[in-house]
Length: 69
Length: 266
Image (spheres, rainbow over the protein chains, first blue to last red):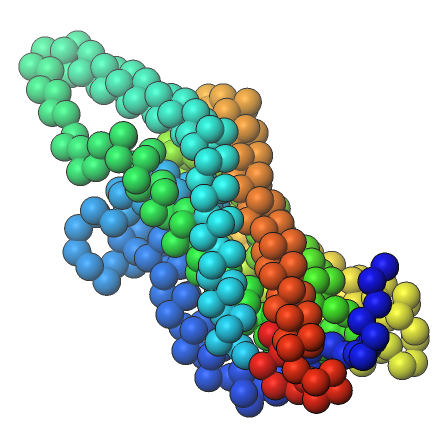
């Protein structure tokens, strides 16, 4: 075991919720949108017409566990 | 700091995505191919039976019109699969980083590495394993196109409810800590999660659309491949993200005067 002599118990501080919130909301929305395009676009609902996105990510959609067809 | 964790999560997602793609390419794709071969055979048999029924009535057999292929199988199994898996892993990596930002220091006195490992195990259970016990991953040719809307809504609801139950159980554990001690608080919280997801699972309608003739071995291997990819992804989050965060914390500790290491700690 290594011992850091000057800061034996210093841990990174807890991030205040109000500081994290903008990241969580904005980042969360963008990332969930990305998941939507991989998982459900042109399947259950369509933002864009056609089936190209659905067919392109078809194998991934099945293997990642999303309902398909 | 939450921003740093978000970006780190997404970068770990790139690594996880590459590993997942390699795994799915080798283990998952053969099952997809077998399922599609089964589907083709089934469709051909159906078309032939329909044509023979028409001929028996003295009518001309319908002309076979091959379905136009929008995206070739080669693209679907190559760059298509790669894109889906990478984007999925990066997105979940980012979400993991954000979850870490909120959970760190609030789950107990765990260091960053332990927090990440715990979070990854809980995430795998809540987001994939439990929802998939109710609505398992299905290969091509399983699933009625007419019910896709309902199935997607049910699957996403199951994930959302399972995740909400996990977060609620985690908060319940914290509330019970003082009165019941760590062991019993954990047991009660785990029991509460289990009861919640069992009740939800019993209340949501079942989806059973596997054709009776579908080969059981292909179905099993397909689902194991799907599970394997998830284990790889969450393991990368739990181990790699944790180690990187631990290192960043140690670096900022040794860089700044020990007891004033308040900001920029990740």
